[in-house]
Image (tube, rainbow, N blue to C red; front, side, top):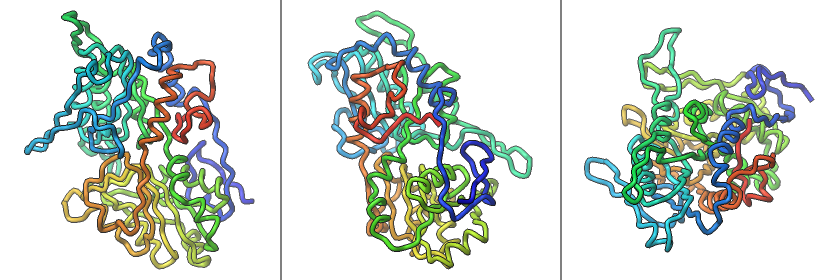
Length: 415
């Protein structure tokens, strides 16, 4: 086996690619953002650890319109000016008593969704709920997590993710039985496959526990890829669509004993952010010489240009291209001239597997022949069912990570 040398524990240079299957070894650490969030979670919720199972409830809010098989409680009213106002329910009437602990599942992919979620939580606190935890299957402005530069010059755009977390962690006046208190509307949360861990870090700065939940194992296990790899005689290679997802490519290359590589992406941020995607020549030669099927994993597809450019790059060397995505935002480009669906229609792409974490912004009917949708509903229920019984377990290193306990492959990310 040809060894690969890591630039750091997760990211690998394109020049270090090898057709040999890599070793994958990751140290789980409480020093990671997820580990720090876990410690903060234990501090914030230790007083609630004994809340009985019957005193907690789960509501799929309908915010963002995602996650199939939702319970339908509450819902969202959409006005002609595109504003969205979440409806709320009478908890005592619905559940026979006001729960002490309430989980709110939402796909807060817009700023309006974030404000709606915070306002909804405030209404439920006013009804007497003691603690509220949100599950975010999408989060607004996840990519606006830092300043951007072009040739060393700062691009004057606002980084907004920090402010989004500020809204979620914000305190407000809560009125219970005519008594007012100043407290958080939302006491903590879980975020499904964050685009980066900056959201978790911003939350930590505010003393707000936000647990990053890895969903890639869940996606792969439910995608049918294992059966495909067992049955096919095709040569297969896993490609990370950019350096940020190179670690995911490496992770599953090790699992399936396949070669891997990472594409390099450069965005023209002053010209709408359109990307230029490249792969090393020896990787392209390997794909062509072996007539490879290419597989890629991504946390989200927004405008789809990266996947589209990668498909163009591979079209003369690859046999087929399979795309696995957790959050299919499927938006239009900034000019409104092309959608992610247009990119995914590329003839080389023969399979697209997505979850229902977010609701696509464009009609997916044109790609329905390639599409498979995997629902998160049952696994979120299983994960929250585990939390209802085990809100904190400070002495259990497998807390929120052991499928035998949680009954789901969704797990706390400690990388």
